[in-house]
Length: 254
Image 1 (tube, one colour):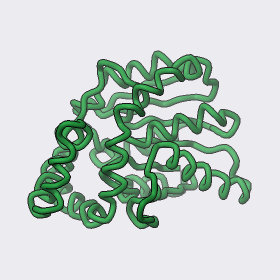
Image 2 (cartoon, rainbow, N blue to C red; image 1 turned 90 degrees about the horizontal axis):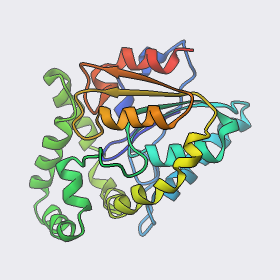
Image 3 (cartoon, rainbow, N blue to C red; image 1 turned 30 degrees about the vertical axis):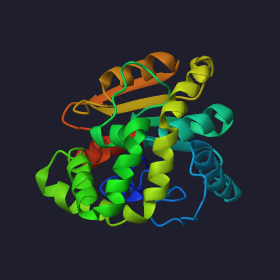
């Protein structure tokens, strides 16, 4: 099960999925408010709601006899994926963490656009500018998300593909940014549960990511007792875009 963060969608895995063909059955979905999923007006877009989305997909798969899942979390899907995994360890075959986060740690860094939209003193003004100057908002998106992709020949087409779905996802993006500081601080209380988590965990991080960096990766590998750390030296934050074949190998390896 492949899960996306923000400000993107399940299309982030377009380059990865072909490398998993014939190795593992693959499901990817857009969280409510993102990509091709519904975007109900006035909905409370929160991590708890994303846990519910994940649970709904997992339960649908369980009805089809796929009960134990390989969960693949990237970026902001770390909190809902790890929450669900801690609550349902018997349903987790493996947890794979791709340049993601869960609880607050001094190692975490926010990309500039995320800092802009999640800092209380800045976010209202930033959102007003986004509404009044959509071209400037688009340029900020292209600059920030483009910086997550290593190869210029991949970058332009990929950013356009992701941005095409982003304007309709702004309510979810803004709501999750509002919750972000509390979401990471409150999850420190679950660190003891992480230390007792029995399913295998594979931590796969691109080393060029300045924000969800190798310090975060190493902390995950220390906290989870049955973990394996794989650092991909030529990949950045969008590790599955930069090195899709190597990430597929890490996901599918026994």
